[in-house]
Image 1 (cartoon, one colour):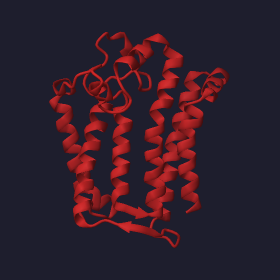
Image 2 (cartoon, one colour):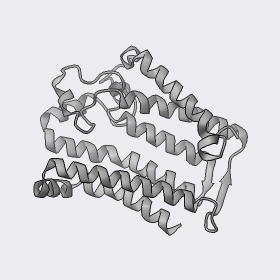
Image 3 (cartoon, helix red, strand yellow):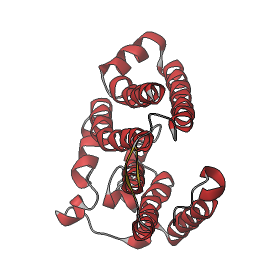
Image 4 (tube, one colour):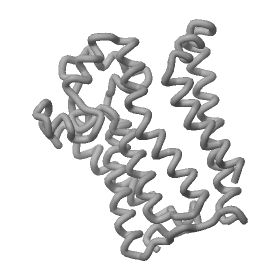
Length: 230
């Protein structure tokens, strides 16, 4: 279990204390943007692999105590929550977003805040947050709490860190994008700064999200040995 805790801490702190602080600027200044991005990507992939392997080793072990288990109706609810997660994740990945890596040029588009960006400027991370929360609803063992809890924390703490980093790098251009959007989903719409236009998201993105959700639901017992519908 200590290995899983160490892996989770490494993965979260790598993104929050390296990528999201002045340390990133110091490293870029020392070795250059390209080498930094290469090393950071390598560390991220390695950290994720470590987290997955450590979770597989810890789950079901002697220290993997359980605090709750979910009844079938709760599992059905969690499956529905995962659909919401994929409706954020898939369109978010397929939408040009100046908050994403190497997509700062999207700010040159005067109509940059379109589609999912009207809902939140961090749709992918909010999708991960919903995905992790849905898993916590039905997985009450210690290993699950460490894995999904750490990913939930990263997904919630990441957006403010990203915004600060982009604001520092892009100045008023990114600040203007922030002013017309929101981090919290639907907050800009509720405040009247945006309107919800589902047509801009694109029917094909929504359909793809549903298909990915259905495929994961079907493949879950094969990949993880557990049926999400219980």
